[in-house]
Image (tube, rainbow, N blue to C red; front, side, top):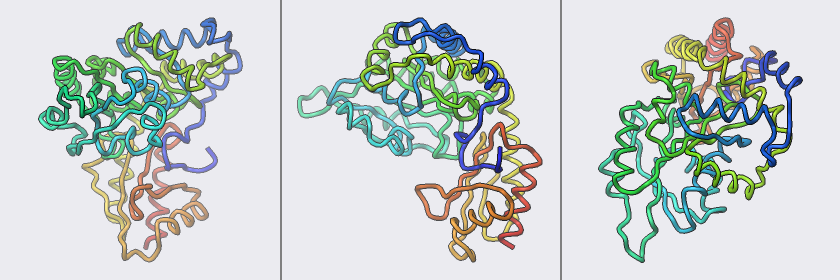
Length: 348
């Protein structure tokens, strides 16, 4: 990459193998169901995650919205975390396009929701109230240091939901980072879910796309929902070819990104004006606090790091003093050393 870009793992460029696969991809028309490369991607993703079927969508936000619109009717309610991406960072689309109400609960530090609080949030069968339809979890929990959520907890939520006639959706944008951190197959982390979405275009390095997975009936209905959102795809095999490389090659190396994130955090501990806790680095994210007394703002720090050290960072959108650094395929051990040099020099 031209810069050492730590703003997000969404900035990843496709690998050379992905570019070659895209150039050579066999394509068809996905609306007719005859794009062979896309069909192969969906089949392999479903098998990898232990679900019956999968649906390619253009983004994680579209995947989550498609899931919620498929699970819920207008006026229904979803229980989820107050820090969830679906609630904070998806432009209120569930309300805008589906008339779906989001009932938010505080997350525990480990990224979980308290089952007793979920129980208390479920609506009574009363005409004055919306109907509770769905529980939504996130794994990894991006707003809480990228913490992974265990299979055991998710299984408990799944049992809880089924006993009450509710569905369970997992926003698994970085589910393979969770799997790497927990040394657990991704399929085990989503076994209890009725639906799960994950991104190809974050840590998995593909240029575009996410997948939504569930049983065959759910995905058939989700395909109709996707079409209504303008997501009918034509020769999408060009994108799916990169996705196939992502699924086959990238998950087994994600631990390298986690090692680099830990090295960043440990190296930043003694940098003036920076507060960081290496014990809160769980996957590929490092959260920093810049002291309000620091001689420059986050924006000024970012400008100098880019100009002098070719390092790109950004302020967390929810706090003027918080910086989130995200490691990925294109951040090497040598890059980590350069980032640390930059922070030390600029803040000394």
